[in-house]
Length: 141
Length: 146
Image 1 (tube, rainbow over the protein chains, first blue to last red):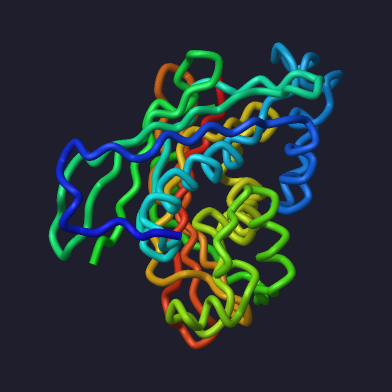
Image 2 (image 1 turned 180 degrees about the vertical axis):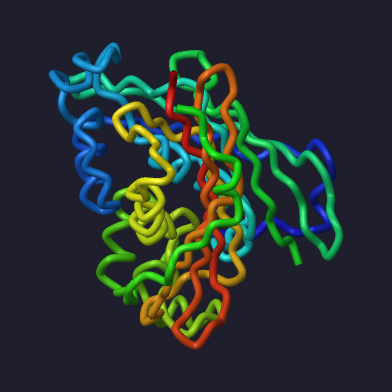
């Protein structure tokens, strides 16, 4: 993994775009790994019975996937020291082999003290923002 | 039911110890597609300056979500879990979670308010080692819709 150099980072620096596909199988795997077995993330019958249009991804799964845009850019997972999101709209995951597509774009929003930077993420699926706020603080040096 | 503002600051007894395993970290990393070798290969992790494999950034939820249930189970909070959605999530990492960590979670109610009939409850879960070393602070805002 190639690490970004602090000298290459300025306000407005863009992260490489990350595109991830999410299928029902991915949701089942995340449920098992995280321990979040809420059936709205794998059972169409339950999801629609509570008023959702269908099975939706775990918000925490979306948050985890979006983090990859940041860790892939810094090249150092441990450099991500602060990370917060506000969940906007759910990611609908259809029951087919294509699943849903998640696009993560990011840019440096501010340079902070102690060689840290704030990264602002825009996370969309089907053209809509799914996280109404997503910010990470990374240590660059 | 409006949330009682007196709840703010309420803290719950520390959780049982959660021992972080290498296999659990690898399983979680696979599930979220985190392919950095530091999640699976102890030598790669050591080369990057860590004593053992480290967890991806949102792994703390595995421990903190369970811990936060102590709030939902509190009859004086009275949040209707069937109406609860996850509104916001924040992680502050004091250092990466790593295999071999024996973590204790302490949960505190940071904020409680009711806006337009929606109950909004913010819980803070402080994860520390048994020895008291701060590892991660996980803050969740839950919304019980009116």
